[in-house]
Amino acid sequence: MPTSVLIADDSEFMRNLLREILEGEFEIIGEAENGVEAVDLYGEHAPDIVMMDIVMPIRNGIEATTEITEEHPDASVIMCTSVGQEEKMKAAIKAGAEGYITKPFQKPNVLEAINDVVPA
Amino acid sequence: MYVDIQSLGEFSDLASQGADRAADALGQLAGANVYVDVTDVTLMAAGDLREAFAGREFVGVEIGLRGGIAGQTVMAFELEAAESLVERLLPGGGDGELVRSGVTEAGNIMTSGFIDGWADHLGVAIDMTPPAYVRASGTDILPDGTFDDDRQGVFMFESQVSSMDEDLEFTIYMLPEYAGFTEMLGHDGPVGDTGDAVPVNKLPTFNRMTEQGAAAAADNITMMTGTETDVDVSRLRFVPVQDVPAELGTETVAGTVFELHGDPSGYLAILFDEASAEEVAGGMIPTETEPGIGDMEKGALRELGNIMTSGFIDGWANVLDTSIEHTPPQFVHDMGSAVMSPLVSRLGQTQDHAFIIDSTVRTPDGNVRCDIYALPDQRELAAALDRIEPAATDGGSLR
Picture 1 (cartoon, one colour):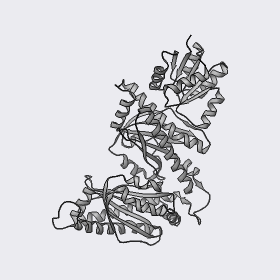
Picture 2 (cartoon, chains in turn purple, cyan; picture 1 turned 60 degrees about the vertical axis):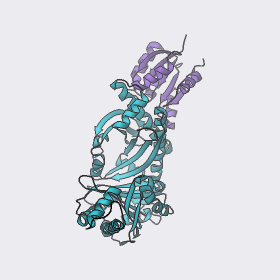
Picture 3 (cartoon, chains in turn orange, cyan; picture 1 turned 180 degrees about the horizontal axis):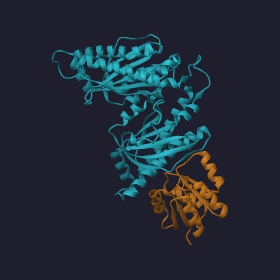
Picture 4 (tube, one colour; picture 1 turned 90 degrees about the vertical axis):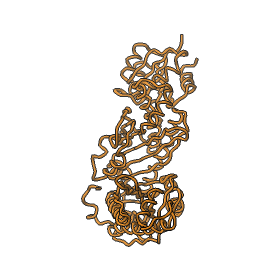
């Protein structure tokens, strides 16, 4: 069974880019445009990995990560964001994120981050 | 309210580093060689800000900042640059929604790069609102609320980013909320012996005074050449000394430079683009001359510069209640950056950052353009501003 991934990003452009990178090697179970959708889709599909943006409307990625990891302590979330502030990274770790990659990224960065969290 | 010069310098440096990171991000995203031309801090009258943006069409990404710093950022691309970016991000194109999403995400990534350094330096978190794609003319590209308080003016960090091989130029505007930002730059005491604090509430007055000086200089051009001119824009910028030449770019200019003696001392440059120099000099010479800038034109431009300088600095001297003298005019005809380099190297011996007072005088049809650059000694300017009588700062509006 391929590793399943949920993509959460408010940018259609970035969701497309991540899908292009991941398709073929991973099973993409869904795409969320905000934190609320991310929490809902996680509840429905329980993917192996969530690629989570931080700055999103309605509910941001850190709040969504907190909600997911509180409900599902085994959840694996990789922050996939343009925000590189140290305080934000600390907040992401505190929320339960296991990995962090900074946009703009290349395919090897994404695969390395996923392999760190879910070894092949 | 006193603003600490060192702090203002640090923020200027942070903006410069942030712009470098934003340029790197764009370079990676678009696969282009992108670099930062120049970063400066401007304190500008709202009316001048409107004029600086007038007649330009932009595509941009607007993001609000909350938390450690409150304010707004805008990444603004002129239309052609935005089209280049889209072509780079989405070769072959995409639907309108996807194009907007691509530009928005690029703006989001670059803004994060710009802001991260500020947050880490201040040891705070800065929250960004979700990015908003905007397409607008003139100052409509700037955030709502930019002109809410004409009385205080606008602090604006501005970084121009260019590309070596593509039309990918864009500008990063960061407009912190005035009250909070001046509080952050706050300095407890008055100027003191070190001159490391500037009374920021008096800067708008100084700006207004500069505008009046520029208006007097414009009147002198009109009087001496018969060419109707007016002050187009006037602003006070704060930049690293080494970046001053880049502000003037590589366009060839002709005009005069002066050394100022008094309080404040410093330098003044009155520079025309070549075509404008020929036109105004021609207006002063009663006989036909060869095309180009010959001896007759040089003499005319020296004289014009001499008179404009007096008109420009007289207002300063009167409001600052001081006496400012200037040296005889030195004619210059070179790239703008080359004209400014020797002045800056002298100024750079005593200060790391410089205030540039920049006024543009233009004819209504835009055929003649003259830029007046004043580079006062930072500490002497601070001390002189501190002496401005409170009455001189009353009245509020910068215009």
